[in-house]
Image (cartoon, rainbow, N blue to C red; front, side):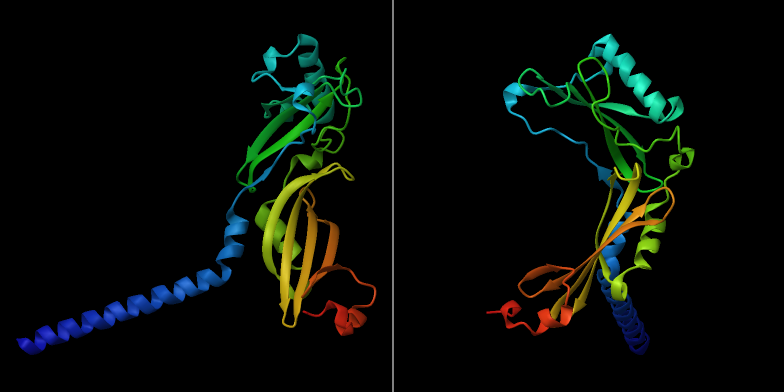
Length: 252
């Protein structure tokens, strides 16, 4: 009887040890890749543009679009319909903004208004676009959304994870992902995913590789490579070897 009890206790202890080992191994594996996994699985936000002006020169926009002057409401609908189409415009939520005193700030728009959408399936928690209007309702600047009316393929946004796979294939030495974000690229009038990778290189702190991916097509829009050295960051030096040998960049 005692032997049976001892065997049961022994098996129980072994089982607990095995569970602990498996849990510890899982923790280690998650810890190694957890940061990258967290970054990719966390939906991103794009914050709207605000003009930096004195408190006396600006006020918050009304909380509802119907509180704006009717002619401004009509202008907003017209501009959005011409830019993204009525279907996409209907998915946008009015999100406030700024009303600027253009008598004090004559070079700025009268209205800086924000409209947002969400698409968690592709990794967008909230994307907030800006539309800036003069007092007569005319456009002051571009709308920070793709021109879907002219380029309907930009209605599609590729998944954050898919964009990450594309960017990862372009990194230097398969660096570790440190940051990911979404924003608007005014050069191509496209939404873009941005990935920031780092690679450790021992005595040199490593490389930093920032890659912009077109969120509609998956093409690489831009790449920016930097060397992170002991005394800071060196941006694409002309002669890498000279910098490594230059004692001015060594720790004091």
